[in-house]
Length: 411
Image (cartoon, rainbow, N blue to C red; front, side, top):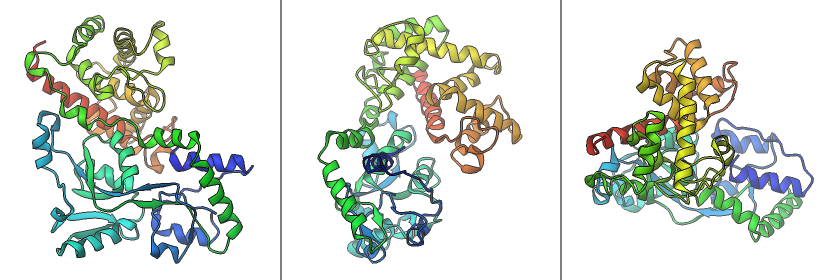
């Protein structure tokens, strides 16, 4: 999946070509792989630079973006005011002086940081990352606190913001830059074909639909800043009574379900994800149909169906995990990423001598590692690849906010 993958599928279909994707684990070797005829196009969110033009030809840019600083929001940032959050962040490139930023050496980010260091007249400590670490890997390391800063193209940062709501990506460090596919030099017919197709594709509604799907999805930061707007009055949202009624039916604390709903939609009844999940609890229509017919934009039906789905998952896990608090973490993860991936992580925990009935530092660790080839190809991983950081962060953030709600709101 991905923006460039969808464009490539489109291009191949229109030209009656077979598309074969070759994954390059070390981005530092991607240009030599192209010029050794291991592939025909580099489609890796490549920034067009003068240095790269010496080795490859670039097609017409299919989008533009700018480089942004990726930094971690303060712990429990939803408890803070907007001003407090802003004061904790680097907002100007000047403030990177004497800070350490980790990027790949052969990336455009490395060159930009070197130039920026000269521009501000101060030293920025640029620490090279290993070539097999992708930008997304570095962003995840910032999100979990391992790294303090990295740099990403804004379009990629926006996608990863969905999976790591605790990062800030609002500090630009460059002007707009061109993103384009690269091909070998000396192939003018192929280059002309690509350019003609890209120029026409960008004028179509289909292109803008794909672009919107990946890069204009709703973000959660603004909502999080206001997440406790009414908490001092004993209310979390205008839907509290509906949440309480349905929470009672399944024996859950309504404040935990409220925390989930905030994580899913920020209490926006019109919320819709790019995969079609809808409403307050971000349910897929086929999931909601198990529990009756209704309009997913209707808060009453959406919360009812979402809570019934929680009950279904809770009933499943209750046969395996007796501790109700521990079990809820498995339920939340299953709600977010699907039961199959969590079962994979449970089986992997058993195989690698972890506690299969414990979430923290055990099953969650296996779920995180399902993003790595050695584990998503393991025979115990029946559901294959999983971006485990999303459900792991989901569980952590929902539970942290729930504990905050417990301290503020009486049951």
